[in-house]
Image 1 (cartoon, helix red, strand yellow):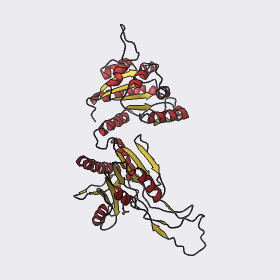
Image 2: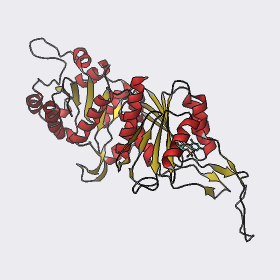
Image 3: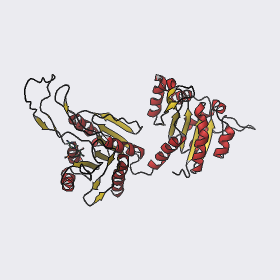
Image 4: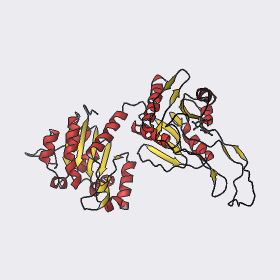
Length: 400
Ligand code: C5P
């Protein structure tokens, strides 16, 4: 990971995790970033300005006023930065940030900045869980700031819980991914992803569903978000959860609900990927009460569900549309048929005959099929498969 030419302004506040900032500054500098450190008055009790200045190879500022009638221009430093990182960010500084307080050099610089802001909170577990901290983190997200969540583990108080500042290598990775996403075709683009199974109600307690875990769709959403896309993830029932400032997760249950949410945004997106395993059929009538086992046999009449992907294909204008085909036989022919019938730009074929591919697994083995070519990939983790799929989408965007 190289930060060559990147100007990073690190705002250090007064928490014990400040001792980790020495490592972080050294690592940024090693990767060729230009680092400017500012500290709150309390931060100096935890880490020395001299150490940080030696590691960053720049003077560290803590006060508005310098020697001999000079001042440290918060405006100049704020406009210089490509990115601001507040780390560790105490509950106090977080509260000041979201309320516009400006009682030290760090706050004045933060308020003068126009660049992206990353916040690595660090505090004791009860402070981290306090409703006011939650509200302040939510507000910071609404400002468009990126939160690097605190980790779980032993805290300076001796208690164990969430509140430890993310480790320097994690912070470095998050910021590295952010800069990389700026080069992506997907950066700033809108993408819709469907994921998971759908559940079709039989009565208030039973449903027809399938074994889809949602892992492929969630991996796609995470990767797209890390490349800077604004993701709407419409997912059927799954135990997975995801938090990213670029991802809006909409949970649905049935195919009809999924269709409604998908069509709400389809017109406005640049890319849509349908990885959901939508139930093809749904009970014609949903019993209002739990069905009793009075009879020896029992029949449910099923009617066809809407084909969400086909509906998108029919309404497609500028969008790049990607579907999935999970097949057990005649894989290639079936997938190619769907590519055409559903008016897709690309179809991802996975065969249940391939070991390690398909439902519930953490790995997948895919073929990417377009009108002109078929590319076969090795078995790999779904997180890596997501990269292959999005690389192909980006290549298509580039040629459009
Ligand atoms: O026709 P088949 O179900 O095999 O097509 C699979 C593809 O179509 C997947 O991308 C799936 O998400 C999508 N699909 C859909 N709505 C359905 C059935 C499938 O969006 N009712």
